[in-house]
Image (cartoon, rainbow, N blue to C red; front, side, top):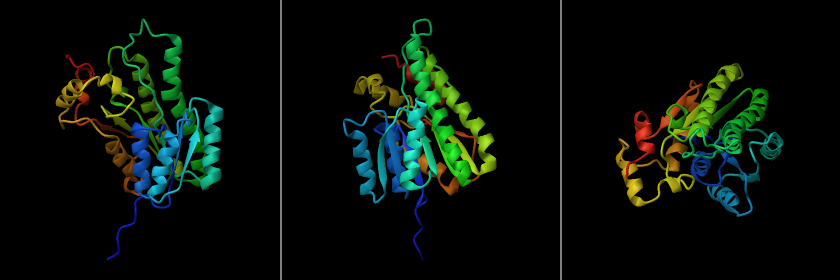
Length: 266
C-alpha cells in the first residue's frame, strides 16, 4: 500500500506577516504539508524573516523572504510579481499581516492610529486579495485565507479600530467568496482567539494573568500558532474543496465570553 501524498505537495503559497507568531506558524505548517512558501514582512533587517525562510528550507521546501508593507499598493504589486517570477504562480495566499490596539476609547483614539490599524488590518488584506485574485483568475484556481479574529464578531471596550478592521476583513472574505467562486477560487477566514504570540505578550503581563486567561477558556489553554496552521493547511488543500465564504473560529470555545476573557479582573 502506497503512503498518502502530502496534501499541498507542488503548491506555491504566500504568507504575509510571517516573521513570527501566527504567520510563522502557518508558513511552517504549509511547508510541512508540502508547499513551497514565500513569506513577507515589513522589516527584514533583523534577519528574523530570513530565519523563518531557512526553517522552511530545512523542511525540504523552497522559500523566499520578501520585504513588503502590505498597506502600500506598490509594495503589494511588487511582492506578488516577485513571487510569480520566482515560483511561477500563487496557489495559496494567507493574509495574516496585522496589528492590535485594545486600550484606547473611541473618544481618545488619534486619527493617525485609526488609519494605521485600518490600513494594515483591512486595506492590506484588500490590496493583497485584489492583486493575488487577479493572478488566480488567470489560473482558474486558488485558495485565499484571511486571518481575522474573534474580535470580528465580538467587541471590546477600547478596541474600536481593531474590531472594525477585523469585521471589515470578515466581510471582505464573504464578498470575495461570492465574486471568485465562478473562477474556482475559494476564500475563507480563520478567526483566532487568544494565541500565545509576541504581539499580545504585553496583554499577558504575567504568568498569573496568562493562567487566569487559560482558566476561562473551555479547553483550558491558549492556542499556539501551530493550532492555526493546522486549519490553514486544511483550508488550503483539496480536502476543503467545497468550502468557501466561511469564517472558522479557533478559540478553545471562548467566543461567547469575549468581553470577559479580554478583560480579566486580577
